[in-house]
Length: 550
Image 1 (cartoon, rainbow, N blue to C red):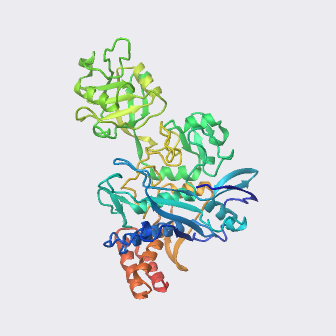
Image 2 (spheres, helix red, strand yellow; image 1 turned 180 degrees about the vertical axis):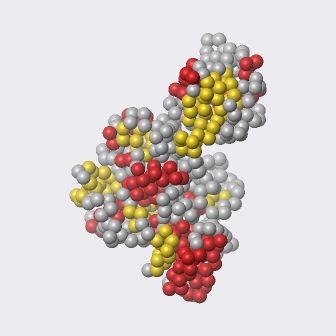
Image 3 (spheres, rainbow, N blue to C red; image 1 turned 60 degrees about the horizontal axis):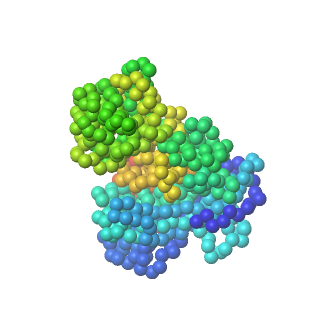
């Protein structure tokens, strides 16, 4: 990964300078698995979810090709993009595991407007308009722009037992399965540029240079771009939830189209505490807090009566003010005991909801195993917001669907980047924050509701911000224009899906033009019935299928 920074004495003459010559990107798989393993696994497999492969390895290759064809129809480049792909025993336990990993195989220094930054190989090639590995006489035995690996142990007793890969390309992932297409789309996204090269722990820039991604990271507390900050400032921002956001205008415009409104804690009284507060949610205990189950009520600060220690952490029973808690919302401070224990203690004291004030900036989602079944909703507010609410307690408030703010963006509408309090080397910073609703393709954890065959949400906009040229028109089958937009605002990629399905149909047809046309007719009709394309577009897709020779 990131084998070398090669000093390239070139100036990028405008990030849109290739608009006249760029074409759909040709993304090619370099299969580095040995015979009988991973992408070459010969284990027989039934056809599944539109994937016609007859062995496990063939299904993996077809799904991977579908992902490459999809991204190839979204981004444009005059230079072929080459990707290493293999299966390997990645880090995994019985409860958690790495599904895949990917990144730039080579990186380059490019200078634009007098500023030199690091660019991943595929993006650098597209901007320069030449294969830099050839131009710079790099090692010809190591030609890939991107490397990718996927977990070959998934489902074994030592690696998420009971789970398995789903190789369908229809998004209909069975319960307990992991959608391989989503993971491949995600990992290729990292290789194309959704990755910052700075140290996630120290904040130090790689070899002293910023990069095409870090350029758009912004600290909404210091109100500085990452390039203006010290190492220590960057390190703190990357472990402060909600603080690190994206400053690129294209992405934040798309985020406004995609993200749902945020659920907030609205405090209405007293005046000193009134306001709309961002919250984190309980993820492993109790129902998720919502306007329907966390309605406006009195919020009372807990007193657990611990002499010489904190009386507001809610960790000891009985509460001194238990009578005041009954039928109310219990407000406690984070610390001493787990979130789930606090919620269970509040519930046993008669509370109908819980607010936990963080002991650090920002808010996080809360996990843990309660000693009893928790049936009441819980939220977290930031340390500063908790202090404000406590200063006016008892207060009155409840959870609302906030029309002014977005779930996954800060109060200025900037997309949040994943910044957990404990640095996660492979996840911190180079992902969309888990607060995003609906879930995004480039969040750090697999989500079965992501449908990457149809939508890649904010990812194309992020690519556009960092310098990629997106396909401005319709996808093509061969040289035939399908009339279906390859990618639209909001990350819909219906045209790219048509192009990728052409590849599936060509694989199925094995050179038989009649079978290819029939496959495209069936697929096009299905998309028309699902409302993804209209009748005019359907007719044009069929015309292209007839003209195309697979």
